[in-house]
Image (cartoon, rainbow, N blue to C red; front, top):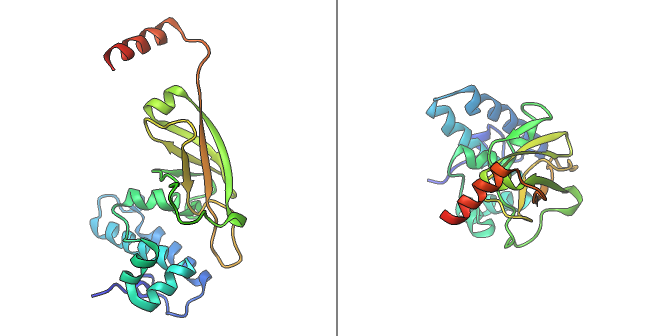
Amino acid sequence: MDRDYYADLGILKNATADEIGSAFRKLAAKYHPDRNPGDRAAEEKFKRVAEAYNVLRDPKSRAAYDRGGSEQVEMDTGFRGFDSTEDIFSHFGDLFGELFGSRVRTRAYRRWSEDFDEEPEESLDVRSEVSVNVFTAMLGGTVDVPTAAGTAEMTVPAGTQPGRRFRLAGQGRPGRNGRRGDVIVTVRVEIPRRLTPAQRSLLEQARRTG
């Protein structure tokens, strides 16, 4: 039986974009894993409301859902749901940062894929470049990223290549219909001009064993 995304959010089928966003924020805050550690039932509800919101917040995917349910959404947009809570944090930039302040920690990441059919809506998106040192790029870490609402701490995964792009969904400029754009982040990797003897020794060892 097909999911009822409207029921998942506790809204009517003629709900406005503002009502959809408000319902999602309320339920996401209620079932957020940080507020319900170890609660599998809350985690599942968190996942359900995130999936419902992801479909209904976008006019294209909402129209597809209204026309043919979740199967039509998958056919039209490719969205098949979230695999985990980390996938949700990755997609929404820790729920837009609106639930827990203007400075948020994006606990996961999602690359802005080159093979998207179209780029996110330019008028609402914010493009940003950040620099990390080569050790953070190799080993992983975090970096502060300016957003439309403040600053987000983005996770940099180990093995990040120069010029790699990431998307912080929902962290861009707000639109009139309740949606927010994304922050498209390009990572620049700084190569040190000088190394300490200890750093050089470790890198030489890594080169020999790699």
